[in-house]
Image (cartoon, rainbow, N blue to C red):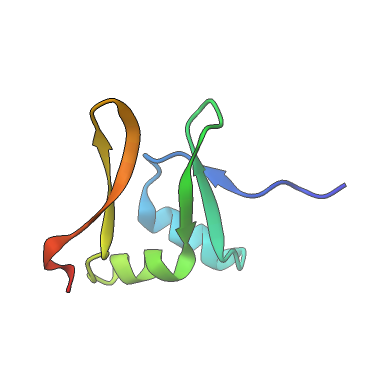
Length: 77
């Protein structure tokens, strides 16, 4: 038997999560709702860049009539 992937909720604080990912050498975590619905994947490398102050190229936004979508941040480039 193997363990399943590491999952977190979208409201998880980033700093403690990145610290935990570093301690466990985890390259990514799966982001899900409390009901287990997939939202996306958080890469350790990208999370560290955000914590260092670099703006992400895309952000997740809720949208009317859908569970959400990725949108390009205009000032990211």
